[in-house]
View 1 (cartoon, one colour):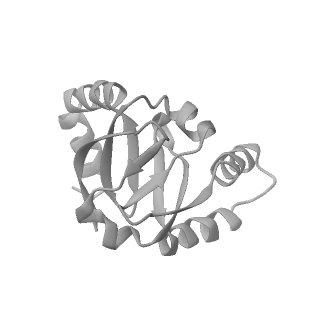
View 2: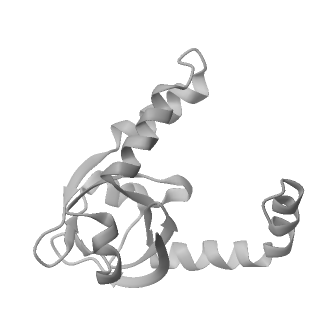
Length: 144
């Protein structure tokens, strides 16, 4: 399970070190793609296969599902962790997420999210203000 929040720095070659505690769960190769809320998502290969299986099962006749599939799949790239546990972030993904030098890596159960630090702090502050309301909605669904 991928959990936690870790601050890291993108180096001058656009490489990011995957937190040491998470490397085993991520594996030697993973899939990096556009995430929701303007972050990047890093999926272990087995988790990515589950995502692509679900996307393949969506109805192609619906524009929203086509758009979402295109966004996720066209932005995806296989990355390999180097000997120091770093991945290379392509320019188009770096630009999509607005990544600057300081980033935050967040464990979200089956994936890692990579956020620009300032964007993450803003997002987190806004969500924290609504924690009670979110819990209420999850309670209505029987999830909390």
